[in-house]
Image 1 (tube, rainbow, N blue to C red):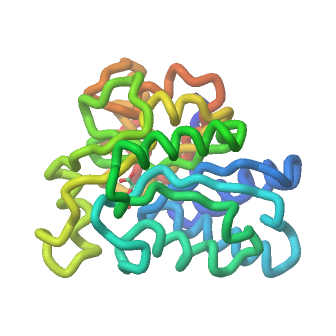
Image 2 (spheres, rainbow, N blue to C red):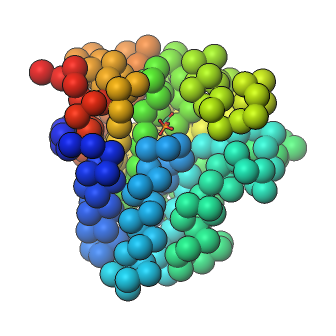
Length: 242
Ligand code: PGA
């Protein structure tokens, strides 16, 4: 894992943007693995701005997202399908049928997970996966204890994750209890990964990640086994690193 320390959330977004832009310019038909949450919003804003300036195009790119809540329709303002349209897809030239996200409303969730895995294979795999990290070390919605050989699956969110995400919902009870997430083995097959962490709440997860002890207690620790991972942290998130 390569570690990049930057000053603050804004510098983190700028660094991540330069990285994604470089890959997109090298390979216009890049397969992007996208993440939701507050951390990548600044990255998406920069990508939209660069598209508007004519610096980059997504016309040939494709994308898959890490995860989606079970039970929220795509027009629900807290669904990740909505998040992606709001922050990125509505503002760039990636064709509608070129981005995919798990369908958390599927009647047969197991079949949907199988479809999603097959879709990633059909795209030839993910070239560049963007990840955030949970305070408990989750990546996607792979919570502590998730097996490293997991593929796209239905997962039950931990209370810590539901509380962390409650800020986006009217009441804490409204936070869905389940999600579909790419598995850890699915994520590990990405050819390259960048993990973004910003703010004090991520300090402990980042400290544990750089202890480099691989354990399902810290799902992100599997990334230490990947040949091409860049971790970008701001000063607060990296404050406990030596
Ligand atoms: P955040 O979420 O970007 O909103 O902190 C990250 C995550 O839970 O993976």
